[in-house]
Image (tube, rainbow, N blue to C red; front, side, top):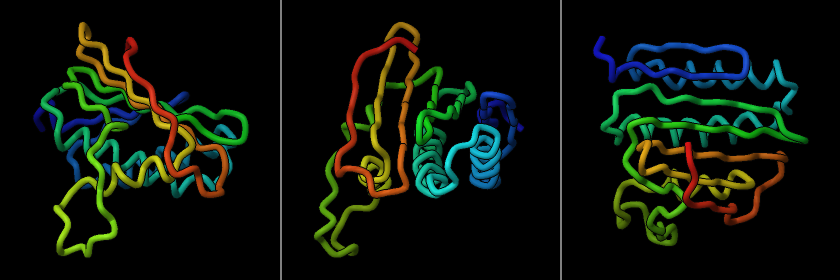
Length: 162
């Protein structure tokens, strides 16, 4: 399998290597479920975290030109979880600045794409994006701290080192 078809998930206690995109979503879910259980993160947060992580990770895999594995770290925080995706060899793409989606339009009148990035800040408490030009490294950090609906727009961030 070519190097660019491999993804590496790095947790606080374990790492998994996966070949091919077909099984990635199942492996991501297993990874988050195990991390939540090990770290005592409330299971009520799992569905939103899985959706956001899957959306961000699949977008990175789909649009990235880099061949380096994407690192995913999950850490318990008070009443919740923080998830960090680090993409080496990245081009700058600030997920917090995604184009707006007009959800009032019928689906047949909307342009395909972008709905996942629209939903992300509505499902989590904060989303931050950082990019290091010199290292060509992108980092996305999101937090989820309660099973209740999160605010309509998450907090955002800018330039930072990976």
